[in-house]
Image (cartoon, rainbow, N blue to C red; front, side):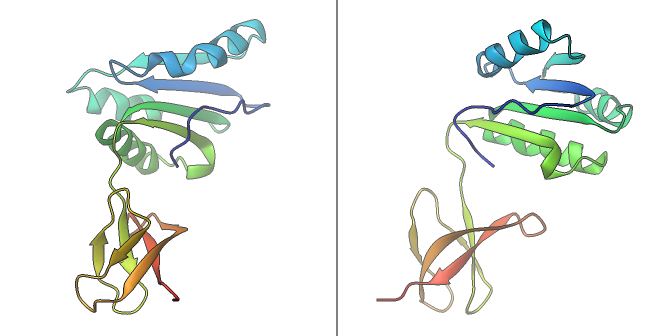
Length: 151
C-alpha cells in the first residue's frame, strides 16, 4: 500500500513509527495527535544495520500495536518483511513510500512475471498479451494481477 498521507487509526493500544533518515516529516500530524491524546508510541529512525534490533523490537510488541512506516521503497519492503515475520498483518500498518516503487504484474494467461514500472499497460514478455494492472495484490508473489486488455 502506497499512499500520499497517513490516516489516523483510533483505539490502538500502542503506535510504532518507523522511518528512514528522510521519512520523519510524514508523521508530524500523527505524532502531535498521539501526544495530545496520550496514546503510547515509540518512534524509531532506522539506520542501516539495525535489522536485528528492529526484529527484536517487533517481536516484543503486544496485540493492538499499530505500525506507521515511511521511507524509500527498499526500506519499506525490508521493514514490512520483518513486521510480517513478527506476526503483524497488512491490516496493522500504513505505509508511505518515497521515490519509485517498481510494480510487478503476473500475467493471468501464462502466469509469468512482468515488470510494469509506472505503466498501466504492459505487454507480457512470455505470451505477448497486453496486460492491464489491477488492484489485486499477492503478498506471496509480491506482485499485482495483470488482466488481459480488452480492445
